[in-house]
Length: 330
Length: 285
Image (cartoon, rainbow over all chains, first blue to last red):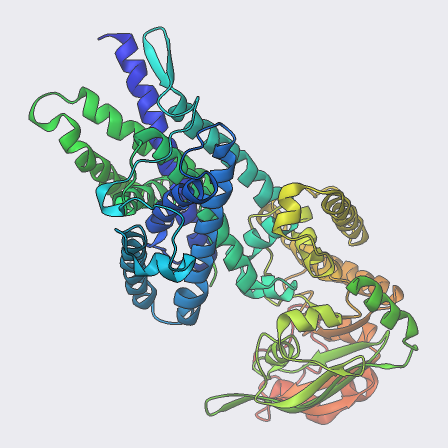
């Protein structure tokens, strides 16, 4: 076997895995605090990508492609995602805090459909009632049609560019994804372990009643958990856009499902587990596609291998690779 | 900001000023009246004991005071102001507690547990933390220093980096006290602080509570160990089936035949046992 080919797949797997990991953290952080699987989290990732696109259209006049547009889009994407997640928590999940577990689950499906349709209608063909509602009758911007998988803004020096080391192609967009994951991971570690609010998050995850008696506002901590997850999902949305050049209003579904798989794989509730689970899932998917010969090989089977891995882990190590830091309360 | 405000309140309190005043606190669970019209007054610097057979409603009463339960009826006021039955309001007002079954944050270190206790007296929000501004860094350093100081105060200076769940039992109890003290309380509620301790550890706990009182705090303590209660307390209440049966000095309560009867039961299965059962608490009622 050609070693360059193997290393190329390794790089591809880590890139895909970084994307999964960035989204998976959102599932795990929220689950760790309130034991809720937020199945609408995939849509937060999608909303982040479209938020970046919208920021570019509005602030970048749909033409600026200089590097500094990237941080501007990042702020826009994170803003839109975090706002969406907070509204979702406040109006959809909080009223169901004490409801049976099935209720928030069904709600999540409802939110998913709502967010997908909202984005589809907002980025719809002109004349568009939603756009008029926001910008008035004389719409100064031209939003592409979400159904036609609009092109993500291409940023000079990041989109499309690449270099080759020893036969392995490294795309700048892939490097962006991996570096983004590493920075987010480090940042999250410091936030959770070395700040007042982070410690309050840990305390709430372990014993909410006692946390309240330390003066911790548990509602606020839950909001912080949703916001942190949404911010990372927005970063993933941009990374996805840069890498695959097109975005689509349905892309949150499968990405969310894969990221959830990654979170369970690593041990849901455990942040490091989500990152490791994401990387492992990405590697397995890419390697299986590249190296399994015959009928079961090829990209058509990649989702089968990803979910087969989930089933195997659930059977033989239900707590996940790193084990969940689930609280053992009486 | 709130720290200085609390400090001001604290400074103006006279030695015998009323700190906690609970009137007619009642807690009903369906048909069961767990706490039935309990009155309790605690003055600054006082140590009050709460005794009574198991199931008498002592812990439920604590839960009512600290806002974990919302009392069915009754009023609680603290330092002259009415207190809403919300844990955050209670801890900010200056009341902290420990638990009968230890409830530490098991997967955090001893120091981190105490640092969480500082939460209600600090204010750095998520954004300040991300920017790591000077305010955040100063507050973080102060929190860390204060937490270490409190670990030293309860006599365990060397365990800062040990996970709470790996600490020996007695240390876990002391850590809970340190965490409660970190909230800068004026009144500390201790729920069976010596449960499961050997006589030597019990003696250490007694010394610790005395030292806490010397720093100006009032203490309400639930205990089954009668010798412990009578050594320590200025005043004792005996709770039976949700109501206060007797209130008085330790001597008065100890010699009250009704207290003995409540503990032993009228059938007199164990005729030679009186109120003093120092080893493992009271006979199980």
